[in-house]
Length: 160
Image 1 (cartoon, rainbow, N blue to C red):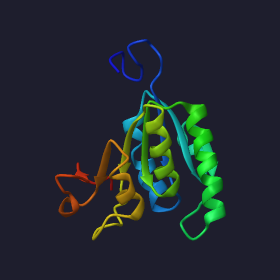
Image 2: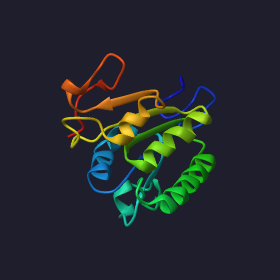
Image 3: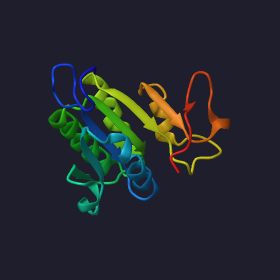
Image 4: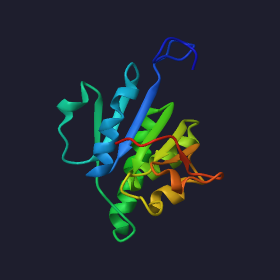
């Protein structure tokens, strides 16, 4: 990625897939928006969501799921696979939880660089999706310096 900001050397726009569950995950993703200026961003979250706050960026909605909802998790897995295949992101960034984990997995298969930012709410230990992402994401970040380890996660500061 060596062209002007937001483009590859070929002139193709850099595509970012920004994935977050609802609540605090989504709020933290929205706080990262300034870092995405100049890039082609597609946001993914659980609904409902006010797309007008995204400044014209694309928005995809997925169902929320967790380990206790296996049928919804299967649907989420298929939906995230479809989104990643159609967006073809160069970068996947997520603040968690399940939708972000699956985006990391599928994004890596397509050669995307992947970043997992664990929630600031996880002050004492990493979330389950962050722990799973440690082995799958290129970079897993914690927002608490005392949770950082040489093998990951890394601490680069807090989003809040």
